[in-house]
Image (cartoon, rainbow, N blue to C red):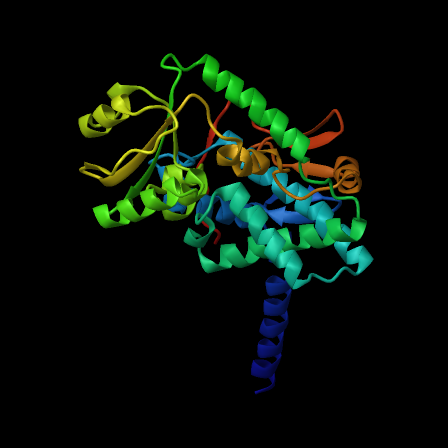
Length: 327
């Protein structure tokens, strides 16, 4: 009995040691200021990214389940940054708020694209969600987060993009539409627009063409050959800045608007989003990241600080990574 008790205690102690510090007996992928991440932990995350069906549809991973070295380098860069963030947050005793979690989720959607994050397994969502929340909490505590783009910056970017679009549009005309299922819906919406409702905002809220709805129904430079005949025939005959009667195609009923320009409000939200920082950061955090002591397994790339910015550079020549599941 005594030997069995001793054995059980020894096993329990060994189990606690292995459970608490299993990374210490596994190959190390990276270390940030002494805090280590095992290859198995990193590969598990990379495998989750490679297995996400929505990211696969976007070409992030190949059909054989490999990831491009640029994708891997980007993810490892985030992990290095997170190591710095976690250390700084612990030292300052920072508490994460609900607002930090909400802002972190918004950053995640910016990184992956709307809806992609929900396709990850629960453990990945919890882990990454906590990371982005802690990032926001630290930046909030540091108090020097960069402001978003100004109205003047958004306007200047729009003016430049519009000038480029106009210069590259042989027809000199831009098409926009609102797509609905029935003629009754189309008639109702047309009456509202003719009475003064904003076409762009109506398209944004009512059009069932979700891709163009995000930009107020805009379809870009008009080229008759790019549309079904019913649409092109109606668009060709339509005077500029006049809303068409409902046009039926195989897709539904369209209200078409032809113009020689694109309204600012159609692209303003998209431009503002493009000008936002990819993740919340701050000059103080950037300095902490640059000053960090980083060691990295070369299979994932090389940590490099250039012009005040730290990032993981992919291995040379470019390679693919086949993430192995964690044991």
